[in-house]
Length: 489
Image 1: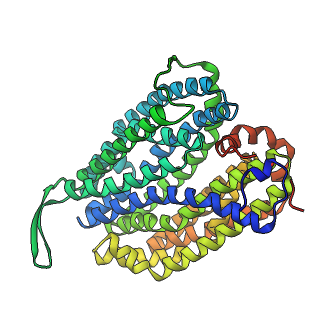
Image 2: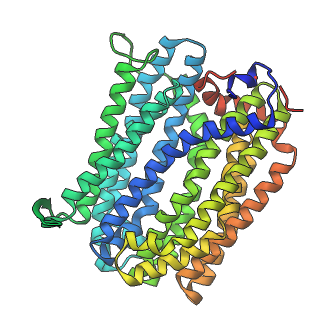
Image 3: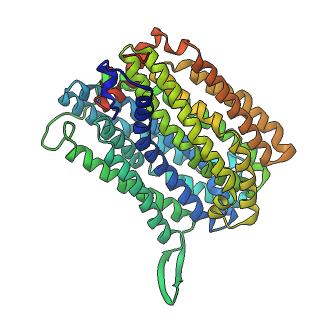
């Protein structure tokens, strides 16, 4: 059986072992990604039972939510990378020191972001072009979500720290638990008291009848409980970094904060750019009506079930390429890149086929409103054509990060989204409605995947000038797995 330690131990790696390593590292990452998306899918499906207007309200602010939580998530990486470095060097005292500072730093940052979000929550739906009948509900949902950002950020931070310590099991289990808790809380908070019949049995189920506010509160409650559990396993149970029985200061140190910002800033900016484009697309969709807004939001959530495996494989690619590049095994790094991208394209092609075939079922599960589900199914089938090339873009980006090649790929993402997708969507939407927006998305993803493959086949991403960046960005993954590194000839 292939093992990650073969890379830095300069052991020969066969082509079969290339595939084994890539698949082995991809599976837990895919499961972690899918658990988060599953929670969004559940939320959307349960709210969809309330009708078109509540669904549209959530859909209107969903991209803004991704922007806010994504910025907080990206900022945690600056601390988790530093802790991973110290764990790899067996400097556990310094690791705990950075861990303490990370709690303070991220609570301050996430609280600030939450305050900004709450301050704009009333105006945001109006800025996005929402109609009067959905703006109030959208504002309320967004307000509750952003108010809980500090708790969600602590969950992100603790999960990242556990993975840096080599504990992949607990974060994955707790992510799945969060999805289960979300279902349970939503079940009682969204709907009114009702009688359920199962065969000859009838029983009454209590319900708070909070509607869209119940959906937000259910999600927030699941996030906060998960954060508490993550925190417990990290600071009490995890060997090496557990703070129980240790002493240390929580005072922020300038060198730690500067390094955290240096590592996190590119990821945060990249996320903001992509979410900014998604928000602009939401503004383009808003004038198309309630059904279009809801169908667009539900279809985005449904499609995410198809592309999240790509992000899991991308994480594995970053680890494998980063380890190979750090061990000066550039040919091996290139082969890992090719294998990961190929695997991603195969998996997401299969998911695209399933999405094409099951589009009607997926949308009906999310909304019983015919106008929403039928339109959502149509646009999902448009997007299915882009899944293979979307995979190429997603996984190639992870490959390039592994080699420390971040600037040009970030510019490629920016240019593709802002110069292809947004103008095409703005041009086609008034002519053919929501289908035009998704045709623009499909064309842009195919274009983006093509330019990423061209760069992958070139040599510049393995240039030595990327090595310093690589050490800062991907060493966390190396330390994580205690891996160790020869070229596949």
